[in-house]
Image 1 (cartoon, rainbow, N blue to C red):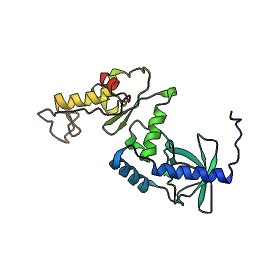
Image 2: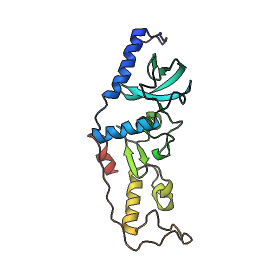
Image 3: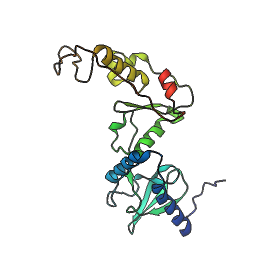
Image 4: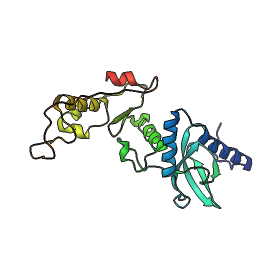
Length: 230
């Protein structure tokens, strides 16, 4: 059992933990070569430099099992950062030149394009926080892409009036929003360049409808069928 007291890690355990963190970088896989290449690119572009890593700040670092975890930067010394894993009872020293440190976000977002930092761990963390049972929100947007995280239980649907008329622009992420948008563009030819009222002269109203397709993809058990039935 865990007594709740933080024990100081030995030198050997720190080395082993650092090795496991580094090992997590080379054992990613699972997304195919293009996905891995994109993940590597975003990591490289948003990686924090030594100067940008501030003590007492939160960062993402690689993890051998969870791919990425949040850590608290306890201190900086001699080219290394002492970090404390938020969900693990240990501290270790990591070299930012060997282990990528990525920035975290101050809050969650229902549309992840509005996050200050948008990279793989930020996306996973945002989805994970929105999936917490205390305030479970199974749907999240990435622009016009709807991401569904299977809640594994029945959750109430939002108010239907939030997806009608002009309210659709501020509607929460939900399959109804996807369906309503597709229907408007299919039946009415209403798109982003269409005037919303008589005073809006941005573009002429289309006279023909626009064909629509909705692609639902995901792993087995992700919630594709249930999302479709909604």
